[in-house]
Length: 160
Image 1 (cartoon, rainbow, N blue to C red):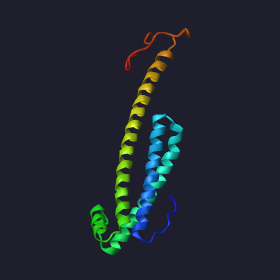
Image 2: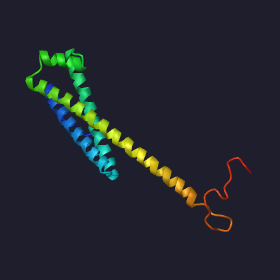
Image 3: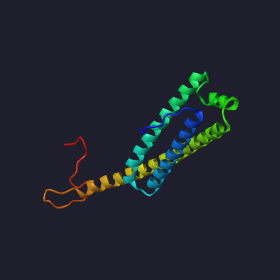
Image 4: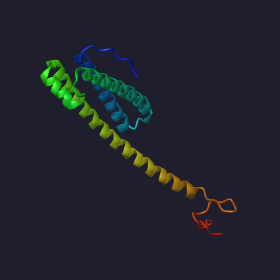
């Protein structure tokens, strides 16, 4: 996890959260490009970046919850909306709306990435199945050392 600066105001914290969510979204789009281009070698580094950024975001969320609990405000989205409507600055309201939009975008990109991963896994399973079947057929030799057609010297499982 990256060291985050200590923030003093909710405006500062929200700005930091928005910046981190923009970074997460950028990494998710990079992951999507890697998946579409079948650049599997890029995925481990992107996964590590995502993990670091998600850790940072979780720490910021905890910090926001502590901030609001000291004010007696429910830390969830409803409490945040109520607080912003009553006391939040215009900048804080705009930043919170940006955070919500970025979170939706990150979720949507992540869903697409999940589908791309599922498609590639299915393709890999099919290819592996074809390779395994081909290796079984190609690897059969008779007692004289010559390759034989599949099944010529084979026996059913459980038979003697």
